[in-house]
Length: 466
Image 1 (cartoon, rainbow, N blue to C red):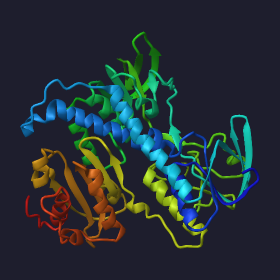
Image 2 (image 1 turned 180 degrees about the horizontal axis):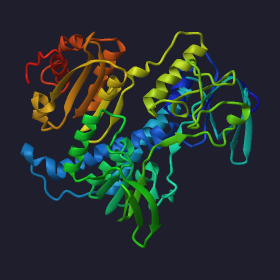
Image 3 (image 1 turned 30 degrees about the horizontal axis):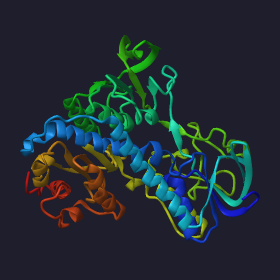
Image 4 (image 1 turned 90 degrees about the horizontal axis):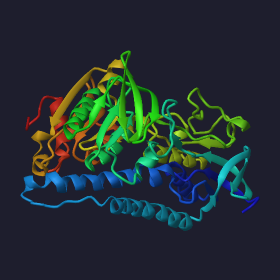
């Protein structure tokens, strides 16, 4: 493939990159996709979204078998944990996804190129794989190189005692005490996995609340639910130092001027992610970045260098797989002369704890900041027949509507399968629905989704079951 010319070269095969490559091929472009790792799929498929959800589901089943089935009249004795088998199942799920991507690349005629990419100029990319090197040229180049875990100066990663989310998915044994630095989605999800499997879990968060990008009321309710499960929280606290001990790590914490020490055998640093641009040579050819090292793009996802585009975690916005997918699709459709857009007001966010927390649109605080008067409707899952049948009544569905127009501006769901329920809210916001539209839509009974209908009714104080 040395010296071959393409219509589009995609750097990175994560959700943004592989979706962009497939869509570009569908639109008649000749496409190459460069991936530095041996498997396709990027962080999401290999060491992020998919393996974490596999472990979350397995650990939830383990917890149910140990303590949740008696309420259903099911007696189970002698429940044991086979951690290697659980990890093997997780790896199988990952392999199914990555191998499936390989088949999709072949089906769509996409050239898969393994190695590390570096810009030679705005039209050529040098790919190095070990001792081999080749140069690809393309009319357009799309940066979809994703992100990597951000480190803390006080707790540098060692991959054994101080780990990122990648290593936290492959621990060989259940920690006695897992110290999680960061109260965002990644820390809470992986903390939940190991809590269910028997670890003591302490979450340290620098701010005064967990999941700070979510609705404050919902975040507080999630914290309460996780505390009831046994998770401990230290808010307004920072990790300022650490030393290795024979058993693990001794971490120095600081809160409101006071210092303390806590010992843990594993420390998970989950304080966010940073764009992965190192070694790519993008800046060297003139690609502009902002103060947070994110690539600056215009409304067509084109960078400051003509013909070079960027999507996903390397540009501004939430670092979410589905956001990257939509940007990848929109970017290549606009390259092909089609009309396309990404509605950033309708991108859902999910925390896959139990209960799950899902959100789309504005929070109450954000609406207040924009001067939007709100009419709010809520429905606790205690009032939902299906939730009671499942024995999963913790949580609430909340709908925020503009008090003047009734248009839905935000939806927040804490409860069972909130990650699935939020899709209805995304569609509602995408089509500019009013709360009355959702309230008058027929929902099957009994279903969890009726909580959204009831919350929509409650916006106009017409709730039936509350």
